[in-house]
Length: 509
Image (cartoon, rainbow, N blue to C red):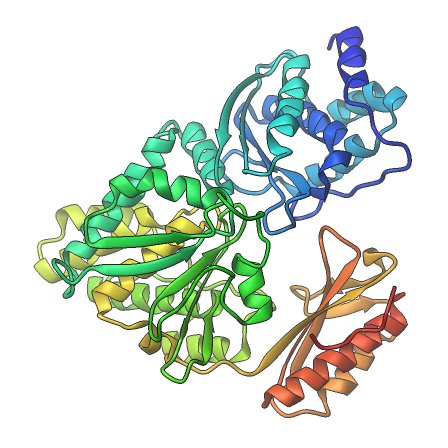
């Protein structure tokens, strides 16, 4: 490590005094003007991580669904997964070190993590469309370069595309080609093969309106359009040419406000969907003939895909099993539906077995089902949630099953629910266990929640601190919307009183 070069390079990315940040599940996120030093240092960390694992590491410059003036950064591990939790601590340590401590901190990390500085390092870099992202990704490059790492700057990417590229690179192309064309070709080929078998292919074309949150999704879908079969007609809205990123649009806005995004006019029964700012999240929605808005979120997306895969596995007739992993936010109705429909807990199906059956199975029906499974496997981005990939999987399944968006929505009825945010002085005042469903601090909070939940029928509530800001999210569901709202508000007040609430007391939107 060239101490002089590090010192000189670090001086051109100075740390604002008094700023403390913590690396969470979403990496670092804050106002863009405060992040220059963090980006430089995450370039350094990516090199150290790459040297330890002898693999390519990804660095994504994005703040996802946050407002345009924010930015952030997250590291991607070798198989496209999130940075290992043990290294989140090093990221926090490095980001918060004072200028004069930087070299010592790097040395400490190298000792603790057994980093051999003489090894090679390779880093892939991507960024979203925020005005600040280009300059900030240059700061990452400066960090990578000063420690002698090799880098490939892919420029504008969706977050899932970077995860995909890192995985392809580290599996020597087994997962796919480590190029954007490779991504487009793999997904579109699988999608085209699937809809060939659809009862409504040919002249009955698929129409879909997509709200791109004025973000990177619009750019990448436009690039991908020529790869789609002619049956797939997509129309892009909020494509970033006129409005600000995530402003009154995008998946988060639609989910929270339960209304369509600005600029997208919906006809009754039309399928519409929204991406978030970095295209790793998606929601579907439609209006019925009375004009009522219906949201189809992650629970119903997971259910549609799971039930479809379950049917295919039954046709294949092998002892392959399927698992559905739900977060605490999953609606109680979806969990019950999955348990009753799938009736079993599933483990991860073997990819090699499916590919083998698709090639060698003698029974025509079983072989065809295995081929559909194989294409679904190629269509789903297995490294991370991916709005483009998920959208294509959903569209393929709806086409193959001949389902309308209303029929999909009618698989089960969600329990009424409400999500609220409570501002607090320090988000770490709230700590949770049991997959974030129970609060262990501050004292007395979980007892209060339990007592409040006991007042309502079919009720459930939990709280969790945000990974990026001093906010605690409160989720509640109950037998009626009125009761879900009342429970959410009462739990929010308990958080406000016991966990150091800030500003005005919580209220419903």
